[in-house]
Image 1: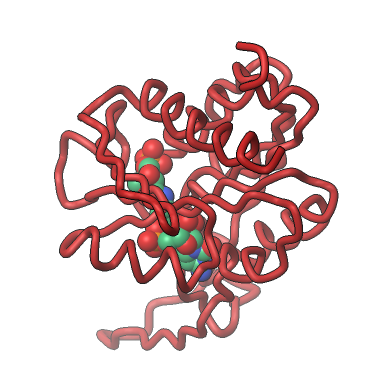
Image 2: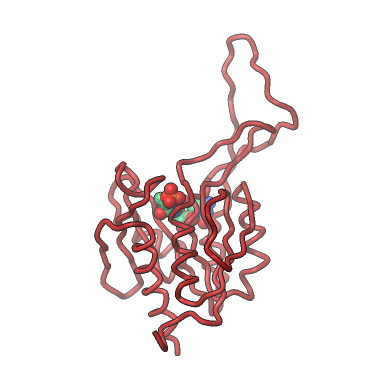
Length: 221
Ligand code: PMT
């Protein structure tokens, strides 16, 4: 639709769960399949944007989308860092680990009698908050994955992460959120009423999120 497309804009989209390695064969991960991020990439492409997906998984890529493969939160951050200054926006659909192992063993960790293993974890940077604080004209869209008090937690994250939009989803249910093809989200925007969408396929959800992104960029013109 004329005047509502993202023609000529470049969006970065992150997808999948980060992997924080303990040793060459083991990692700490999470349940993210990447489906939500890929759906966002598809919907942005349909709206005319050029999309770079920064992804930890290999799913079917929307035509014309460039994919950069990463594993850990720090790798994801480094790739966003290279492209963010020239981009028009960032959508952080990836499930980024809050912690990584303090040290990655260079060889496979061996069992030691009947002893357990103590892992020392160190905090990862908050990627979206970092880029949210750095943004100039870019739109920054964060997600919030919650198991309780969804809107309350999402409201706090909207502010902390300097996000222009925040997409909140309940990840305590098996019919939405992680892994499945459907999602049910509430979109928060500073100064605007919350928009709760029905349970929809991830691509339909993504198209409605992209409508909100289009509104943000139109609002600026
Ligand atoms: O991948 P799927 O299986 O399709 O599932 C989709 C999803 C549930 C993963 C997705 O809809 C979703 O909610 N993604 C965000 C998951 C997440 O990490 O949520 P969070 O509430 O822990 O983090 C809030 C925001 O901060 C997110 O945008 C996240 O990308 C970002 N973050 C988090 C931690 C960190 N160290 N850096 C970050 O940038």
